[in-house]
Length: 348
Image (tube, rainbow, N blue to C red; front, top):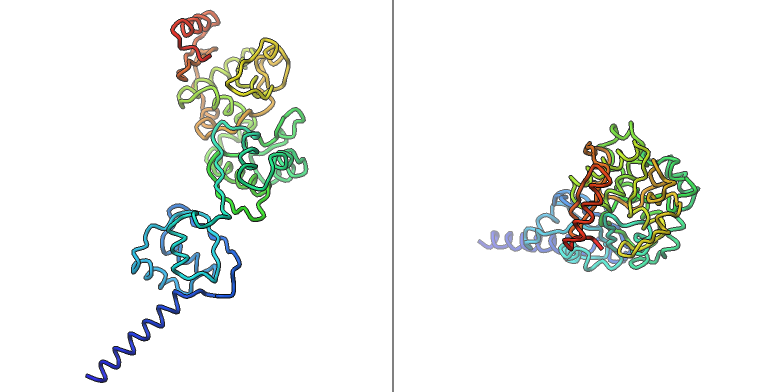
């Protein structure tokens, strides 16, 4: 009995030592920040492997045991800054809380339909990078030439001197996580271009027979003109019909962009009649697309530009509820506009 009790005691002591060893910091003297990315859907096994490979935990097996013992199953996908002087308890606590304990991690949300100027303001508000610094990088010819050589969907079309911001339309709108320490404009641009590449890759074969710059330009217009996928497909079809007939596209959203006006402001006859390579209301832009995209479009708008709906429509107009009405002649279009105004549904 004494021997058995002695062995049990030794076993308990060994378990205690093993436990304390594995929950203790890997290196108490190291407070260097180590970036750990936990993507959505990563398994517990792969999280354990990631932490072990980064030198943050002593045992992959014990990490999983610890999670079960402490009922810690809701580890959140995020980008973390961890260090080797953290205990296992501290690490798991951070993984459970998401980014609330990672003050050096920033989420940047870029929405569909926002343009490069909007992006620059968001970056300035949330990082140490100024809007001017970001915009300067977007226009850096040497940088752009390098990017063209690396990304298959970028071409020399973006180097047209009349384009306001060469990467307009190419920076995919989404929510991204960045570590603010030493974050640069190039880091942000490349991350967004990488995401654009992922989104465009399934359409690479179709785009090989099309001009990507033109597709993204059409997509950017459809993004701001329509809300529903079916409307956007028809809108692109209307634009194609008008281009084929040598008509100007007559899209107000291009005029807003051309003159850097807010979308809720009034446009003037003078603006409509002023030539600008973006302003498709101008008679001189007959049969021509804008020189480049006017915003960063969603995937659904890009799909609409790649696979538009064919029709005989030449005109469309939206009401204040963003319902879009399509017509085949100028007279029908004017009748619909008059009807919307009479019924109080006119957008203005």
